Image (tube, rainbow, N blue to C red; front, side, top):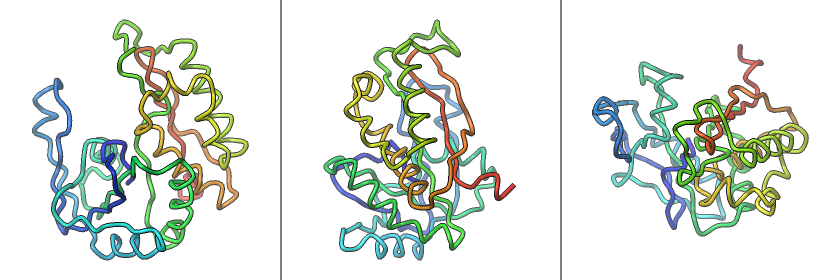
Length: 221
């Protein structure tokens, strides 16, 4: 899992046997703060991630992180029994978009071994402009950027990094942490040459996109 919520000045992968559940948020219902997702980790997968990334270095995190809410809030719906091993890959804030896409393509062999590579973020994520009076709706600029990104992911996912130069990008992604997970999905699609499917779509509260993509989902159905 590439989660927007492990955004730091390094590239690392969780390598502990039992990653803790991290509640990296505030102001939400108490039940969320008490939720536990006790999925095991996988040292073997973590070491393989580090090996595939060479010559770039990925540190093995054996104690400091775990599974943050960008990971468990998604996986609890996919693997509710928490019985599938999970590792998280950090987002290196110091690296350009091209670094993340190249790293994703190096990790592609994992998919042939049955490892699901997921990115958790938001195509449009501007919390400063959230309007709770707009459920199920998006501002015009948010809807337009979402449309542009969807078109790019459908026609030429390898070009998704170019959206950083689009006029709507700064509003859609005032910080890049929630956008970068999309680069990993796009790079994998570009490498395989297979089309992406839209799994979820829609806008919330004006400035949040819920659009989600999948690669090869229908082939596994």
